[in-house]
Image (cartoon, rainbow, N blue to C red; front, side, top):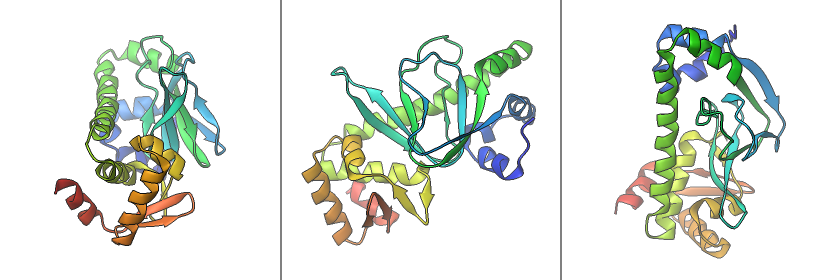
Length: 226
C-alpha cells in the first residue's frame, strides 16, 4: 500500500479524493504505483487504450485535444492534486485527449486491472469514480464557458485565474509560454501580447520568460465582473 504522509496530504486536500470515505481512500491506495516523468514525457496519447488513472503528486501536466483539422490544441494545465484518466476507465475505450508533462513530474498510477478488481469486490465504489468524472467534467465545462466569453482580454483574465488555481507554481509563477496561452484563449499572438502588457502596465500581472504570475487576484476578478 502507498503510504507517504506528505503526498497523502496533497491528495486529501483535493475536492474529489478528500471527500471520499477513509475505506475507499485506503483501498484505492493499495492499487497505487509511483511513476516519475521528465519534462515533455507523455502519460498517454489521444487514441491510446485506457489503462488506468493518474494522480499528480508534484510537477505539472498539459492536456491537449485534437481538432477536426488534425491539429492538437492545448486545452488546460494542472498541477499537484489533479486526477486524470477516469473517463474511459470502465468503458474499455480509447483516450480522448493527450496528457504530457511540462516539468519534472511525479504521479500515482492506478492500473485499470487493479481498480476493476477493487470495484468488483466493492460495487458501491462505482459511485466514487463517477464523482471523479463529474469533477473533471465540471472543469471541462468551465473551460468551454470561459472560451465563449466575449472580449479577448476578459477571456485571458478568466483563463489566468483558472490556471492560477491549479497549475503547478514556483514562487507564485505559472509556467506557460505565450504560444500555449494564446491557444488556450483562442487569440492571435499580437492580441495576446497587447492584452498581457496592458494587464502588466496596470500592475495586475508580472511577466517573465515562459512564465507569469498574478499580482492582484481581487482586481483581476473585478475586471471580469465589470
